[in-house]
Image (cartoon, rainbow, N blue to C red; front, side, top):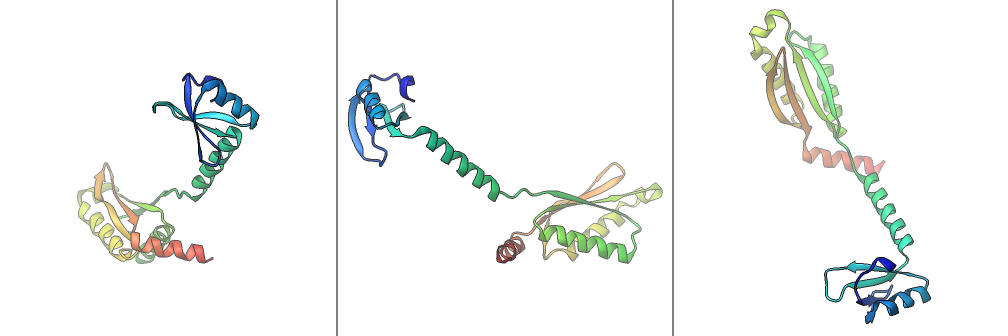
Length: 176
């Protein structure tokens, strides 16, 4: 920018995008000073380097506003964790199923954990059946991202929101 440009000759581009032509660096800097703008090198590798006349402070501000808007529109997926035991009651299972459905509708991933205690650890197939049953209950809202696997005294499975249902829940939020 301005005095940091090292080339002897530069191709100058006006603020509106039109070509001014190839000028000596001193002339281009004088022109920028007369217009109360900055001379910014936009393509340093070309022959001769391309410089643009612009208000650099305004340009930097517009870039930061665009980045802020992009960050605002980003969505971060969270991983919610639900824990169960192998010997879970029907009502408790229904509540866990409902909570899983809600999390998936909100666009969050769900990590389901079953803890084995005592002799329950000898029969991990009971835990796998429970997780499979839960996955079937919420199949409309989410897909199995990580199949059930045993880690120490617990078994975990991760569900991710299904793409088809996620788009419809996003439409509902826009309508509100």
